[in-house]
Image (cartoon, rainbow, N blue to C red; front, side, top):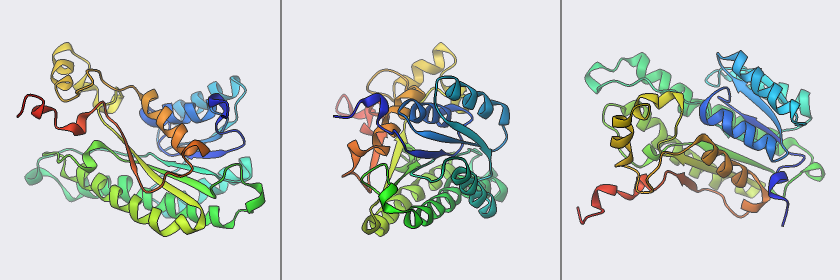
Length: 270
């Protein structure tokens, strides 16, 4: 078996939304596994550049590229810069995501549109560009058995309803069917498409849910495994799904959630 630490040697990966949280950990994990990484950011250039510095200091290859994934022209430029830096693209991690929470009666059209544009349309634009690049790249230069791997970052809320967050839940439910339909369409090209659905992960976006003892205790009632997830839990899943170890896996969602989708309230027969 390949050395797990170098599962992605000679691969080039784009990670969107990689300047914080899950995206940052995934980009770092891919680099540790041997991939050259394009660290995409939208607003936090300093954090992205810091990650690139850390990766290159450890002997890896990385560049930071700013782009708004909900803008078609910027997505094209992101991929152009990836190819200019490293010659090709082999893996896309479509991770960028936002929340604009509100009860339905108070949710503005801007709240709705922003979340759908980034979380769902952004995945479409990035995946479409990835498919175009994968199809055009010479087959004899592939570092993997597949022509390319796309991983969309979903959520347990692709299957768990979430009152007060209908825009976010709708974007993740849409992402689920987008991922499955795309996988069906491009498997004939040797392109694999999968999703990762994190549960409660210790990131800045949900800090209020874990940064006090009371909040954490309440959260843990929803997690049968008894701990909150760490960004590195998701990163390890992304490395595996991106690699040849998962070559026969396409069109599926890998839940990294400590059992949150197991209806924990039914542990004692409801």
